Image (cartoon, rainbow, N blue to C red):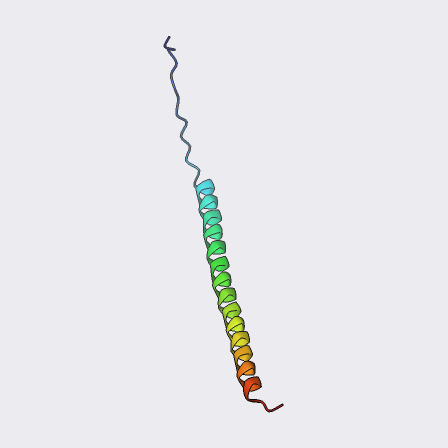
Length: 69
């Protein structure tokens, strides 16, 4: 059975609300960007530390193999 019901669309113009939403979305986008930069910096520094540790271990192994005991 069909209902004889009319649907109403209420449209409001709220420029301050739109502006607030835009600012909030901008803040979220900037936060995600900053967190991405921090992640890249952390991964770079962690990679350097691992490389230095590996190089130091290999260098120590080579020196120990030639060191007269």
